Length: 317
Length: 202
Image 1: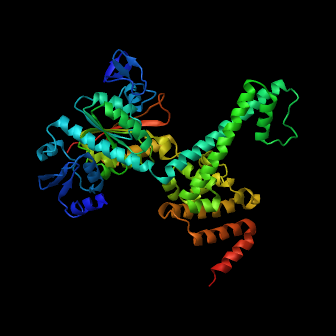
Image 2: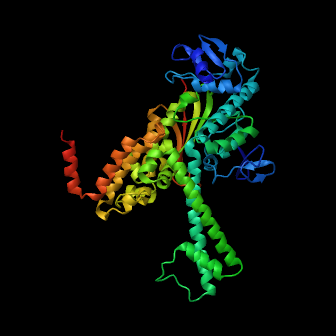
């Protein structure tokens, strides 16, 4: 609110063409009016200045001296630094306060924990095999967490401790996954509704933030997380990737092989819209979600040609 | 530039990034810093205690700290918040660094803060690196220098580095820069080229 009022009473370049605005004051026809105020006020002022770069003459510190904004060169730099530090602190704080900032860290931690748990489990199994030479995982469908539990119970000493630690780590991971899912539903309700909180959060993390995701074209969202394949495709003649992270969604990986690319494409198209609603509105749009769900479901089930006919019919008045 | 034997050093407070010290000077490693690599290739622009520098793409302030050891003042532009935190810490201990959190592609954001400079050093990972240099050249005095560190891979991975290099040199020339030198930074950095230009006097 304070900034609004401030910007209102302070006339800036849009109104006066021959006025040059700098961090320390405004110069009109060689006459300088110091802006006054402390460093935070000056930092806010810099943000509200709209400088025209055509034509443009950089400021000189002598102008600031004549303006009474500083005593000498060293004082000029010192005062300017104070303003810049304040502005940078403010901007960093602002960027980190975004709702997606913490979700981004959460989902990256989650994926790293998965990697660590898998690595440790593999190592523990190899270790366990030394004392149990007949042990094998062939023809057995023991889930990894049961396996780790068995190792903990059947071994002694350090290995048992390690296995116990893996179990605790897995428990933490489960809790974190729940938290990620919940936070994603809150931060990006539309995207989460279409593809699930966890995958939505992964997409956002891979894009670098919700704003970045909302600015991506659907074609980029479709192959997010397939970086290696995408660049291999761009560089050589290998086929383009059909899907990246969105493959993790059941609609894509359950789809028959020959229409997976199509499903991925449609889903990515709807996700791009969803991400934009999430970023700019921040609330679930039920009408959009319903029509998007219907469109995606239709793509998954109906064979290619029939789909085309249906869409053609729909398009008719 | 200060050389001890064939080691490039700068004079200032050490311990910025656990750099090696030689006597009471800081070793400026050409494998870590592209600007140091340029000096090691036998070229570059002399930075003196009178030089005012606009540094685009300041990142964590590693190279910035060395430049600040030589220069009168360094206006360090960085966009991303995380490296900015490091840069601020470096700038707190070096009184001639002015850290500015802004986008180098939008010089109007920091135009009210930056004065006319003698040297623009640009090291950004952006596709339109020549455009950024040209847009920022309004801050460069006539006769001043531009050092552009070209990350060819950020411009376009599909193009050959040589092609990107040539295109950038042409773009700078047609914008009025006089290209003094252009060279690859191998063996210190792969796929990185340095272009040294001057802005002609009026």
